[in-house]
Length: 96
Image 1 (cartoon, rainbow, N blue to C red):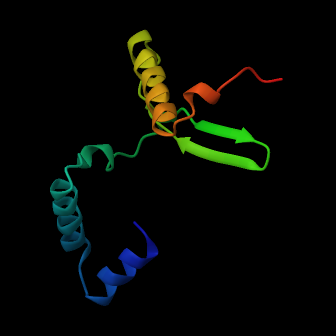
Image 2 (cartoon, rainbow, N blue to C red):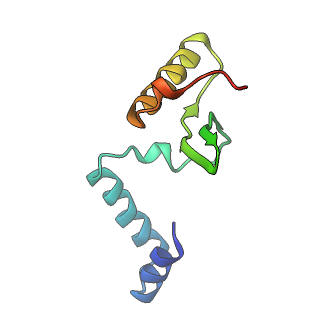
């Protein structure tokens, strides 16, 4: 939650229980799975970044759920999709 959201809920005297009800309905209306956000566990992420002359850009940070071959293949596919979205697949070369 952002400080602005906390401030708005506090300013309108929304209780914690009411706030969670509002937030869960917003998640559902946006098509998000609230279970992806309400767990207190550590997760691994694979950072996809591009660096170059005067350029440092974080492109994405997909979740890595388990280190199984299938999950790793899904992450590699997701990396390829991100690179396609940024139109940089053809620009990737070996570091010098």
